[in-house]
Length: 329
Ligand code: PBG
Image (tube, rainbow, N blue to C red):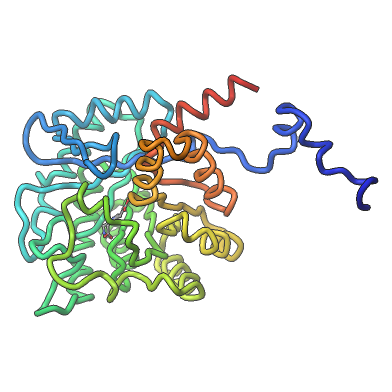
């Protein structure tokens, strides 16, 4: 069945015809918007490398969360910038820690919005690494206890989903059993399972003020050259009790998203990370690309690759764009 019997252009004649056969549709229901909770009062600092993203103090964060909810976005993911950092990340699991306060503030004002919390220690460690150190070594098993404590304290404050992003071995099992022991049997874990040691996180480190003071994260995050290993990481997290799997970053890792999607029957999230966002913003600011169309193409490609959920700094804009597109057809 080839030309002229089959003419693929028949189904591309107009927008109605195209939308009838469209395979992938971006929905606002799939988006998660990242928020940065900052210590202090009345703070709303622009993150220079990520136009549109701000560090917000607890008194300002509920208003932002409300705006997100009004756009129909179902969830936010919270990151914290604490006032003090030390070598055991005490502020990560303090009852009145910055994320714990932000959770309570958002839940008070916007109870219907789902709150995902990023569980990691780098933002709370004086040295900026995701685990406890001895010399320049990042220790695995002692770190698990602190991660588990952090996860429980987020759940106690009201977090709906716990998202460990540290890449220590065994963290999902440690967090699952700590949550269960504390009666949070119904709190899901969204595991950053295949998280790569990526230079695309550059702008995030300005937003979260969490760059490592020495070395890099390559002894715990994955080597960008590896794909088979991603499936191993994903399978481990599933065995340990993960409910949702994540691949991160997204754009340079669409092959990983597709591979995980075809191998595993668990909900799959992809993190469209800071550097991916900043590239679009920078090129658009120069007038070199069209921001809306490029961002929508990127988000659609992440979905097409197999992601069910997309964490993205474009979420608020995308919510508006999706609505616009719907009303046009
Ligand atoms: C914390 C964490 C990072 C990101 C999410 N959680 C930074 C890192 O691992 O260095 C990156 C998010 C982004 O770039 O948008 N470990």
